[in-house]
Amino acid sequence: MGFAGLRVGLVGPLPPPAGGMANQTRQLAELLGAAQATVFLVQSNAPYRPAWAGRLVYVREAFRLLPYLLALWRVAGKVEVFHVMANSGWSWHLVAAPAIWIARLRKVPVVVNYRGGEAAGFLASSQSLVQRSMSHVAALVVPSRFLQEVFSSFGMRAEIVPNIIDLTRFRPREVARSSTFHLVVARNLEPLYDNETALRAFQIVRRDCPDALLTIAGSGPEEQRLRELATQLGLADAVRFTGRLDRESMADLYRQADVMLNPSLADNMPNSVLESMASGVPVVSTDVGGVPFIVQDGVTALLVKPGDAEAMAAAVLKLAEDQELWRKLSIAGIAEVERYTWARVAPVLAAAYRGAMRRATH
Image 1 (cartoon, helix red, strand yellow):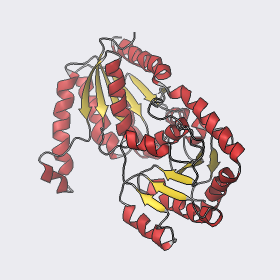
Image 2 (spheres, one colour):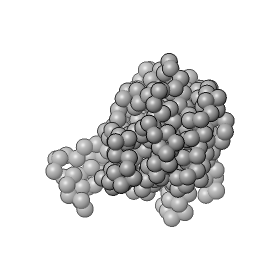
Image 3 (spheres, rainbow, N blue to C red):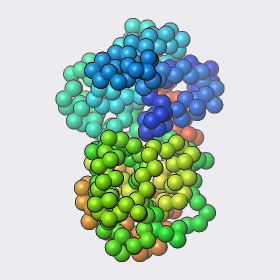
Image 4 (tube, helix red, strand yellow):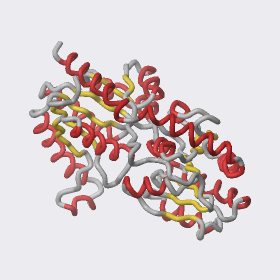
């Protein structure tokens, strides 16, 4: 079975904002459609209607939840399989679990596509609730061996269906290195992603590379604090905050970069790491969660401990000074991300759908 003629209910967030899961949902819808599947999208982060409801902090989710449940019910009557993009915390309880239970009522097999680096903590605190819903799921797929092992430790079997990287969009630039050493961070401006450590590492880098520049592409509640920190560190003229960028602008930014920093404190399979590698940009990342499962230290990236600005700066300076190492990581990264093309992932996803539909008939 390929995808031709298959009716898929795809449940998940869509841009804006253009986060990793939202981009993957949109990309998957486009790819399935191009493969001749009929895709019925159920957007889990649809705009509040009426718009003023979004300002009502304690009740606004009800304004989103009710239309979402109705959309799930309608779509479940039209499809052969549900593909549910799932994450930890309230996203699970308000998005994934309702989709699973409505699909059960409508007798539609469900493939839960779980992602998120905080899965272990979430499952430890909500194991019984998650397992109650998961008992009605035909297949659990995760993007990395890291999450597969996390779920296995809680007695749940998961198959690996990797994230998909568009190598026609994320591709290397023609010139290997820019004249000004340019660092990029592409994570949300939230405590989990520890952008403060990236700024402090950049301050150290500037001592040896006074012309170096840093671009932080993302948005979030820490933006003002990070802007103030950049000023306090004497970096205001060297740090650019772009806000969240769309796919095309992000791809252009990678092609202007020399090193990508991933300072996160928890992670699964960050698209920004894979997109950077596809763009020929060496990665300096913390060694948290699933990151060591997708890159190898010294071979396809340089890994450091979380929260260690000195170690992150040392890794960046190593790449600035050693052009042969920079070139080696760039070439190895480009080769590694071939594993994440649609041509490689599509047969695996099709097999997951086929298995879910087969199990649902028995």
